[in-house]
Image 1 (tube, helix red, strand yellow):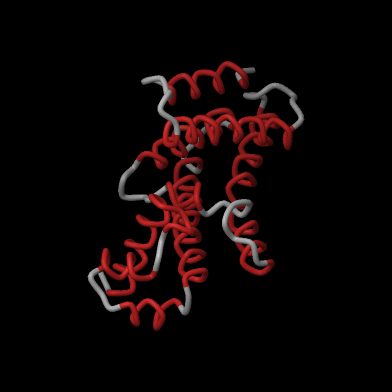
Image 2: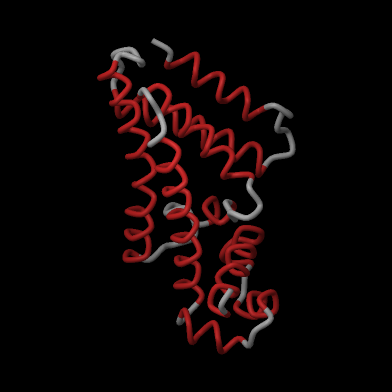
Length: 189
C-alpha cells in the first residue's frame, strides 16, 4: 500500500467515524502515520480528500454491485442480488461504507462543483437498480410496475435498513434478512 493509499484509508475511516467537521488533517495524518504536509501534497485540502474518500467507496460499491448483477438469470434475481450485495457491502469492515453515509451529496459537501460531482457519482447506483427492475418487468420475473418509482422504493428500503443498522441503537438482529424478504415479497411476479 502506498502512502497515498494509506492516507485515503485513514481518511475514509475517520470521515466515516466522525464526519467531515469532526475530522482534521492532523487526525488523518496521525492515523495514517504520515506528516500533515503529505496530505496537502496528495489531496490539496480536506474537502478534496473528503470527496476522494466518498468517490472511492461509491466506485467500489458500484463495481461490487455490477459484478453481482451480471450473474443474474432474471431481472428479479438481479434486484435481489443487488440488494443482498448492497447490504453485505455496508457491513464489510474493509469497505468503509460509513463514509458514504457521511459523504452524501446532501450532507457535508456544500460547494456546487463538489456537490454536483458527488451527486453524479451516487447516481450510478440507483441507475443500476433501475436497470435490474426494468429487466425484470421485461422478462416477466417482476410484475408490470412503474420502474423508476419501484427502483426508488427498493433503494429507500435498503438505505433505511443500512442507516438503522449502522446509526441507531434499535436495529433488530435480523434486520437485513427481513429487508431482503420484504423486497422479495414486494417484487415477486
